[in-house]
Structures are given as structure tokens and as C-alpha cells.
Length: 448
Image 1 (cartoon, rainbow, N blue to C red):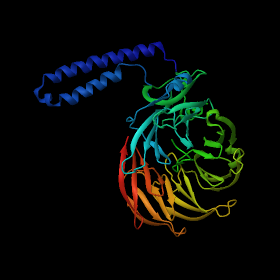
Image 2: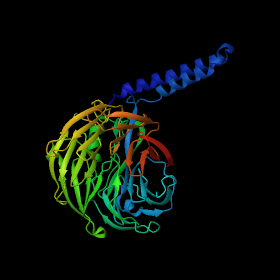
Image 3: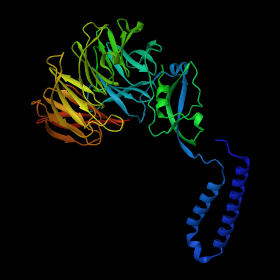
Image 4: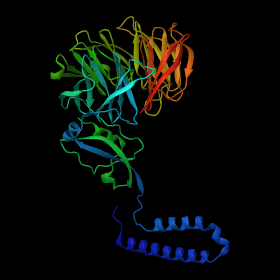
């Protein structure tokens, strides 16, 4: 909006008069003994008046999301191997034989020797800022690094080496801070750069032609010694099926050929939205020849018997929510969490009959506040409920889960091992020994 020159001059004159009058009042008050006790309050009032009158810009300020931009060459050059170090970062867990991996958000991968769960030893750290998920097969670790897939040889845990980079093969979208009102469009992103995240800054509200709100910003944010196969928690997005590595992004299943790990290559992208008709894909779980995908609109089953040509089989839908899934024999267990970012559905745990893989059906629903990740071992179901602790259910009767015990702590996911339970929460891993009667005993805690 263009302001009239005379109007601006008049406003400036009024502002000057206010400043003069306010100053005179302030001096008079200082001379009054009765008012000296109120001096701090009066000073704050005067400061507010001076600030409010010192500018002719009445648009105000707001919280902006300012993109953090990095070049691809910089991202790739920062991959290093170092000794164990503190990261103070939330993360995920993954296990492969006697190794325990902690995927530290925005930092890298901690590697523990977990032969003795009561005393895990932090062996090494892979500096990998863009990592979100990993998978391990044989002597090789696969991880994402923003838009790249990277492969490490971990046959000698004391001499880990990067052996392969598959560039621009992973979709990455930084999480837009919902606290922000505006997106800062003044930050340019060149063709060899990506947005790795955002920082929040208070800035003047821009003219209308420069305003970009949350929805527009979201659209702009998208950027382009171990043997056997390991296992991740219920929030995993990587799975290995023989010589194929699967990853999921928001709307698609990605297939990599890892027949020769040091020549790993992108094979194909399968757009799931065309199959399922909507929903954002969040988790990936493998059982036998089937993939179970947890999304914001339900659970979906994919036949992966032809490892390089997975095909959709069936699904189970619900209202919009966040939901990881785990499977045991002919039953699938799903935690469904509503809320501001997940949807308005009631928080719950669903038990799904998948004996007919082509037609999954709901067996039971158990209401549970804020369920996150989960794991199943035999007839015992473990559900992490954030600040409300770890809940242990007897799942013998799939029609009526029976809560047996609740253990305190802020936990978000679990991996039930044969010998013990591994749980993860903000900046920590907690390991438990199994006891009688669906009980657990803490045997170690690692903080990050």
C-alpha cells in the first residue's frame, strides 16, 4: 500500500509530539518521591510508547521459516568416520547381530557393540547429517543422506569406509516448522543446492506480493563385521528383500538393486498414490514375501515375491492418522495416533486379521492415549506411548488386548529381541530384560 506524503509527514509530526510530551511527563515523575517506587513500571511504559511511535511501518512482525541451504558437494564432502561422540539428538534404532545402531537425527549413526546389553560399548560414529533410515545386509550398511543413497563397508567396525554413493536417488522434504507464519522467499536455492532444514526468525511482515504462506512453502520444500539382514523398529522406512533394497517416501516405493553392494543402483520408483488413492507413506515392515506399509490413510500390503517388481495386493483404511504397523503370523498390529499433525481420529491400537492377505479385516480396537511405535513377541505386545510410558499387553486374545504393565519414561519405539527388549526415546536407548508375567527390568540406559 502506497502512503500519501502529507499523511506520512503528519504522522511523523504526531510521533514527535508524543515523544516530547512523554519525555516531559517522565521527568516530572522522577521528581516525585511517591512515584519512585513505580519507576520500573513507568520506564517500561515509556519504552513501549517510544518504540510504538518511532516507526511509520504498521505491518508488524511475524515468525518466518528461513531455509537452510547447502550445496550437494558440501553435503557429500562432510561424510566422515569418527570415534564415538555425544550428539544430543532424537533418533531411531536398528539391530544387526550383536550390533546396535542409533540413527541420530541431523547428526549421523552411532554403532554399539551390544553383545552384553547390560553394558553396550559405543564403537564408532558415522558423521552423516542427512540420515533418517538405515538397513544392513552382510558387511554393508545402507543409509540415506538427504537426496543420496550411501553404502558403507562395516566388515571392520574399526575401519568403516564409504564404498558407494547413488546420487539424487532419494526424495527428501525437510519438515516445515508449523510455528512459522511465513516462508522467507528471499533465500535463493541454486540447481546444485538443496534445502536441508529451516531456522525460525522474527521479521517484518512483507508486502502482499511477497507473502508466501505455509502451504506454498510446503510445495517448495521438496528436493529432489556383520552378517545377515538386520531389523529396524516399527518406524523403519528401509527394508531389504534378498538383492533388493526398498525405501518409501511420501507417495512412492523405491527399489534399489544391491546384488553387488559396491555397485548399488537405483532400479525404479513405484508411485503408490496411483495404487492406493491417497495418504502419505510413513513406515515399511517386511514379513516373509510381503511388505506392510503404514500410512496416514491405512495399512497397505504389497507382494514382493518378485523382489524387483513389487505389486499392490490389498489394504485396510481408516481416517487420517499416523500409524506404524508390525506383523506376527496372521495378525497385524497398528497404532493409530491422531492429533494436530496426524488427524482427528481417536488414538487406538488395531488388530487386523491378515490370514486372507487379499482381504485384511479388523478384529479389535483398543483405545490408548498417544500410541507411537510398537513391537510384538509371541503373545506379548509392547506399545510406546510417549510420556505415558511403555505399555505391555497380553495379546493372547486378539479380540481383547489385556494391559499387564506400564513402565515410566518417554519412549517412542521398540525392537523385541529373543533375549531382551530394546526401546528408544528422545536422546536415549533403554534395554530391558524379560521377566515373568509380562514384566520388564531395566538393564541399561544410553543417553545421547
